[in-house]
Structures are given as C-alpha cells and as structure tokens.
Image (cartoon, rainbow, N blue to C red; front, top):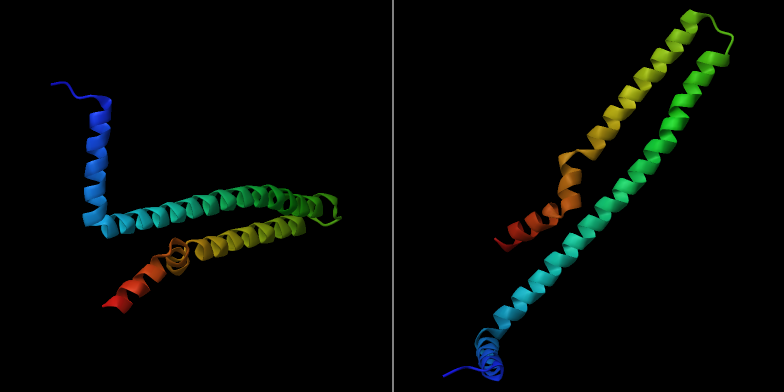
Length: 129
C-alpha cells in the first residue's frame, strides 16, 4: 500500500496534537526560552557592533588630535631641542598611562560580568538556593 501526501500530513497532524496536549506546557516553555536566548543574542551582537563602530570613530578622531598637538608644539615652538624632547617624552608617557587606564577599565572582571549578564544570572541562581 502506498501512502499519499495527504496521509503523511494527517499523521503529522495527529502526532502534533498528541505532543501538544501531553507536552504542551514544556513546549511553550522551550519556545519561550528559545525566544529569550535569541533576543539576548541579538542584543549582544548589536551592542558589540555599535561598540566597534564607536571605537573605530574614536580611534580616528583621537589619533589625529593626539598626534598633531604634540607634533605642532615640538615643531613650531621656539624651544631648545632638549625641551622639545622632554615635551615629546611627557606626551608619550601620558599616552601610555592613558592607554593602561582605559585597558584596565575595559577589561575589569566586574565590567565583563555586568556586560555579559552573568552577574544577574549568578544573583538569581544564588537567590534560588
């Protein structure tokens, strides 16, 4: 006996009704959790892309500003070469310390726990115990 497309569809409908009636609340929960995880993933990707674009723009703007100011000071000011070298070294030291401060702030564990949502998840898990 050969099954037709209508028979297969009817069988699928019967199986779906059985699954929906007996496991309906489980399926709704799985669907809801899937939607929540998907929305969180989209939000995370959006935030990352926005951060990447803003960081790129800031790098371009800061590079021009931060490089041109000391070069202009050292090139156009009527200082002796020793003073110009000292000013250039002070600017270099300031750039290095500024970069370290930014990296320390961006890569701190508490910031990453807050950004990833792990802090709230951990608080919810501890609260449930």
